[in-house]
Length: 461
Image 1: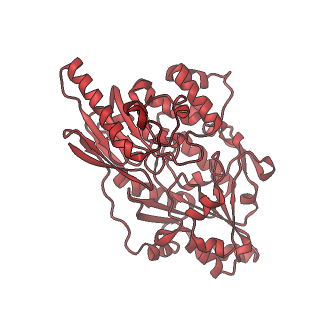
Image 2: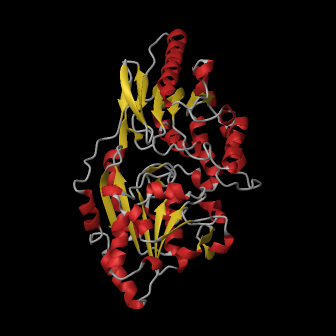
Image 3: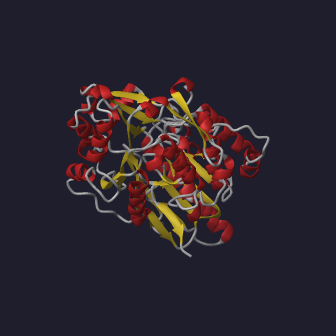
């Protein structure tokens, strides 16, 4: 047997797999030495435009009492906002050094269409000095029309509504994490604004079925990616003065800090992750085992690992995903639940036909279900085994998959224990190995995607 590790955010689980399992993993990037000093140095980097010092100085020259907004990600991204890797406090220190007070600073959480973060969640993810200093932290609310400003239409016709307090700020700074993204090519950069700070109506084209049906709307692709292009156009409409984006390894160590002008700094970060995220793939496998990583705090986010697994799967193969859904909404929003269940009932072909129909009424979160439909165009729903111990039996009835609990004895089902993950995986793998041995008279090919949603298997030409 071969023992592998599944890093589920705060918890790591050891799993035993057959000896012939192939390990598919990213290159191991070198973490930054002395990260705190490297973060501060990045703010003076001139390769991506003016330094933060110059940007702030210019703003204050025109308006001595300038208001600053710093946009941060929510808890679905492992952005380093505290500790020696923290990218947030050095920005605030720079603002303070220029005489900008805590009362002039707003930290705005780019929740997009996600739920707002609680006070407890904010305090657990942000540098405590932020709260000691008395800086206001506020969640964006895509449904609050009184706190949205209309900026007109994009070339594709998106109605651009942006957070009002963001637009009222004189100095706009974005922060975030750049990692591969299964729709926009890469996260970070422009995504802090779109979808991070937009109104719900602004998602209708940006995350609409036609854009996401494009073959270019995929991991690590920016050029010709309509999802990236739309987000960038919205961000430019709203205005961005400066960004600070980080890249991480699979152990959440800093591998780079990229600061400066919106496009230039983001492009540098994307080039950095391409060095180690893309995994050359020589063949497809009967069985893929993987995990939803830090991102898999709910089923909505776990779609990322479902999509990155597609190139590694044989047509009709079996995919086993384990997760630790710790979010308040373990599946996702009510609209995600509704459209996900619709996919389960009618299947991927009819689902895609339906959402691409001119008679279809756009439903928020349908885009993430469209991503699951990509997977189910490759394998049938019952060939996905999904297991997250905290989920209830009622939750599993909504999901298009085979419930991983069915591989456990009755007394262990729906008990919320991560210690049951190895048992589920081993039983599910053994079942498929046996089926292939009996029906096809051969050994099953098995691979473990060690990095979950973060590594991107890419078929070699």
